[in-house]
Image (cartoon, rainbow, N blue to C red; front, side, top):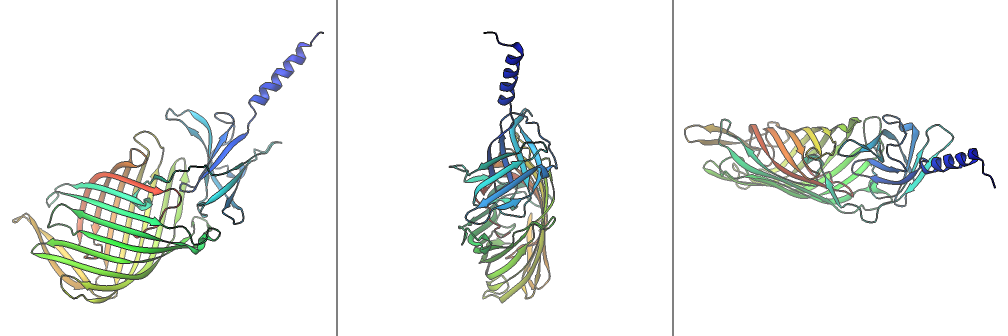
Length: 411
């Protein structure tokens, strides 16, 4: 029997075409980074990248709620450490909807031709419990040991600790009802006569009254904080003790995404709230000044570049401002360096003057969890409100966030 060569060629070409057919093999949602990783059938798949989200459709199922269609902002192809394109397509999603607790994702690719590609992805059996955080503002667990060089004052070593943990949502079907959690913040240094050791420990209720994005606004976060502010430190000739109780104090956060693309993210988060409670003791009033009340305003601005490469996992530049406008008098601490004694002279008053605090940080993450941090600080923070005049520090940092859902702990 004779076989036509043309017929054989057609069979071989058909088999080759089928072997290299584009298809979606898997899809997975990363709630913390608001991305979807799509595994394609071929490396460096022939797709358009950039702001071509209209070619993709993403439908996410969260618990037992109705499926949600999430807009795709950017499309990119993953690369190896040697910048070789892989078979993974990364879909950057709009950040207005929380994807925590997702149970399935339906990814559809519509390149404009006769074919449509679709895949139904589900969570892995063993997802990561903890992931790296790019900065202190993003971290649920943060520990930093820093060194401040001698600049018109003695050098010092200090540590900065922050921990936040959130319990499961009251309702997985209606996560907007929120959840409760816990927050611990601490800072101290090795010198007995410099900045005060200060701590905060408390509980929080966190809810999301607005979960939908409106332009650059990614939603609204509401939080109630209740806890205690403490300071124990020898300042000059005085061993200060300051203790405050914060009643349930509300504040609103307004996360804004200014830019997102090519591994660069620029975000801003204005904050407005009110803190009130009771002062039990301070340096000027051993039995306390009683009721305290402060208006709280502020903003956090963060620029992050995240290539996820060796020794350059991410680099983040952040600036944070908090303004507290007192309605009742509170302790006001000032210090001046005395070159004769090589120490600080402290003055204590009780005033209602506004208390501002500005901190700028450069976080260079070498790995997902560890890196180097340089910071500059100016102003005063509760409870002792010791004014810090241009403090510069550098140190090593560990920062991480819970993969399931991060906590907007007290800052």
